[in-house]
Length: 404
Image (cartoon, rainbow, N blue to C red):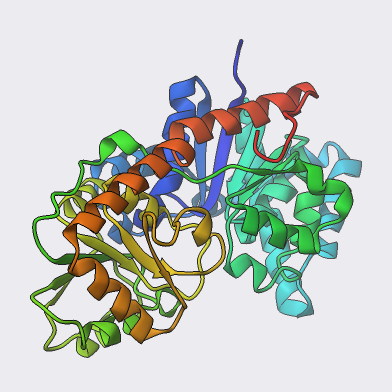
């Protein structure tokens, strides 16, 4: 069977903080799909932290760069103007779904211009289906490119921030027009159901983000090493972790991998504590760090289902994280980690202290975490689910059920 030629679109690809999308693309290619990667913006050099990112960056179509050529922009839109009815309907869609106010209208017209160039590239490359990750501005471009070209599209919705402004991003219209929507968790699916017409609910499927379980060595559990990996921004709750550590007993050490706008303030808050800030690191570096880790901590205030928790569990590392959103669908309290209330430094400290004092429990939880990831969050299995959705909807025989 010949598999569909796909295009993947995100706002910025590849990024060190979104390696799960790279894994998904690689797994689909391993299944036999030809996948053209597309990015609205050109990725900053700080995100190209390893050969995988650099290789993907080199082969990715950059939409804004292409739009900078007036001739390319004009030729693309002239192509679609040859079908004036479709072109005008797509333009009306851009106008109708624009956020309120003059600024919103202007932005959606810019997205329409980008969509014309993207659609031209997809048609020239023989793409049969367009898939988007992160259902914000780049998904608006995907929806409009589909309206211009007739190439069907779908998207993966993550949260949590998309659900802060669902009407602004018109996720109702995007879901209605998509062939299907891949939701990363049951919680995420339920949030989309709040805003989408019930007639479309049967096209909302659960497809997890995932990892390659075999890539991770089992942690040694020989010390009292803690690890945090994530963007250094308010939503990740790192100040709560630093407060919790101030009362933590024993000889411990925290490594922080990641970067972001709050780094300088966080480094000041951590002064006097045994904490190292390493900045962004490659996927291989993160895997190496996990193998030397005893406990992984992620005190986020808002999440989807963090891929970094999957990586920690795949390494046999128990996690201490917050009871929010889809996290309990991955982390089972007392089984492969501890779930604590968000923003509660005392509860976080107590959970960390309990695990630091009990290496046998850490190993037991680590083994349970590895089994959970192998069963439900293996990217190879999730890619097969996506492939079945792409193929099934194209053939008019979509897989049945919430979890294909």
